[in-house]
Image (cartoon, rainbow, N blue to C red; front, side):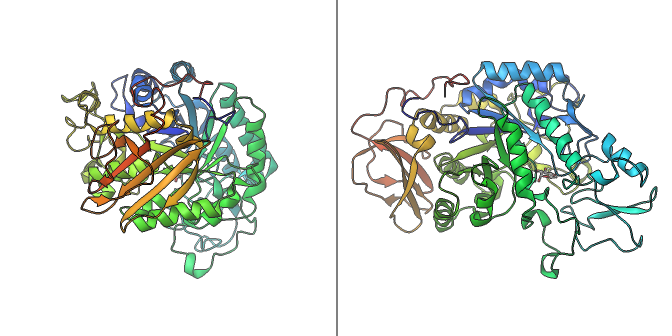
Length: 532
Ligand code: GLC
């Protein structure tokens, strides 16, 4: 790529989220693993993303599928070991893919040695590493409720006190007010940074700062998921401490915050003065669905309310939510929103399997695994058309999504008009375009039900028109344009005739000068790490 100076790689990056249990299984136990992932890295590199993020692979009793960590500095045996991890990182880097881990700072597993020690005695040296409070065994210390339901407190008979957990009782909250906790958690980051990882998605990182008095929350908030509104100023110095650890390392290591707040004005604070998180998820796009005006408002708010230098992180799906196709009830609409999310200013996250056009699996009651029913979006990826779809050995831990033949990687990569090829074309156009990766956004006037905007970097412009209506619309533009990608499958390279088909999106570039060399050759390989 040329003309973008020395911008860090993560600005305008595309990141592919892998749920390792469901991606690919090499050892035949029915659960995905790191070697399976390694074997399918070409699928990811061919797609044309910049990075992969793996949901947690650390040692864990798996009460919350790895979001309950019992050892931060090791790989759980179900996924492999440190040697398979190192092999995977080298293989990913060799293909030009950065590697991001999922760091879980708010809580450990109840089986983590720190908590085992902490709960063993009121005099434990690690007692204060978690939140312990006394009182009456019938009345929790405050009115906080767990994000998974029920009180956020569990009474522990050993020492006859309560401990705090904003998620499962098996996930006790770490007390980040204790400097020893900060030091110990910083060390867990260094462990992986030393092994060459490029950064971290940070799980519910906005929850780590807490008022040690743990006051009741106002009654109106008691029944709302605490992660959805919690916003304590004590988190910010802690984020600066975390950031300073990343800044000890060369190579633009990145921090991406899972901050579940929806209002960009509140997300703004998590960037600090450029000294806290690098990227913060903008989850509101997942709530919006098929809503032209809602997207226009969100784009405007993000542009206005985030600090000028801040980079948003767009997301349409992840391991906690129904897949975008299932939420919208339409693959066509899911593809349109994907073109939108991948052309907005900021980093964009793709949830593995969405590029195959997958819908959520229908998981029968007796096969449910997750405590709060998030299994449908975590179903195994079908690699091959024929059963068992590349999952040889034991039956996979969850059933396959619907139509695994048609939505297998084998079928999708073979069919030129598939969802996979659409994703690949959008990503290829984005990769070579400074305007799409780094350019400013200007929204354009458009007819009702249509969203239009331009991205510009230097002299380069790209225009996006999204038609949410169920009939074609006329959207004339001031200069002649050529289609780079059209979700209605009008071929790239054709002249834009001012018409956008029903429920479709187009990515356009000016007809003069002609597209950059390579821009219509959408199938070149990803750049090597460091070249982007
Ligand atoms: C985050 C994760 C979710 C997990 C929770 C507790 O929201 O995305 O999967 O259950 O944190 O760690």
